[in-house]
Image (cartoon, rainbow, N blue to C red):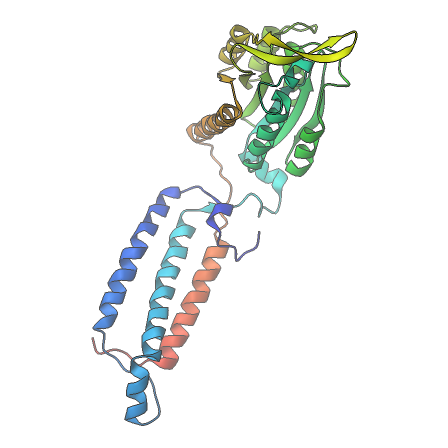
Length: 343
């Protein structure tokens, strides 16, 4: 990010209502072009009258049109600057800037059943792809990753290094973990990762395709720990309705059998309710993506409702720099080429 970047999609806006003013720009262009047709005035020129008349319909016309474009572009830059644009990437100190975001831990089930093929190619691969899409959409949030099966471990502590985090997401599987589904252990490990120096907003996104059948701590006990630390837990049950081709270990190795999808929705709902979160059910990839989008909207709404006393400093420099450059060019053109109009 540099101080001349005009791509508004690289910014977030803290006073976005000002952006409605950009709708006035096309009407202003139309008005100025219409006025230009009846405008009188002379171009500073040394030469015979015939040469000046020849230039009148060509050079003067496009230079004045260029000035109109410059004026309206200058106004657009000022309107965007008033909207308080802010770029997390442009922050000189991301660790300091992160205090304006939230802390998120992704707690992902990697048990063998996550290889079920009701998602293409399987649940785990799709869960990883959508998680990375979610990470790409974050700005200024510290995000960590906990994985669990019959046991749990922290694959990546909460960090702003999203490239590192996505690399860890790519690597995870349950091959080196105890078999089973220890939802309570996975949630408890995620709670521990949200340390005392975590931000005011702390979130765990817990994803599973089954029910708790392992671990020393129950899911509801882990939920109580999250509640004590004011951590909001969003729970996601992933799996199609009915049955699905699911891997099963046999003496002859692993094979797929068509088994019923059994998600302990009652427990997942209780975890979410106890921690002021919400339970979601994902039956396909698009549904899972929509769930992450809804979680993002819910958290944004919470951030606005809290009305923090401090807010990240606006970074409108790029738009102000272009506005100053346009103003300078306009003044030079009008001073060097035109004499004042009589109207």
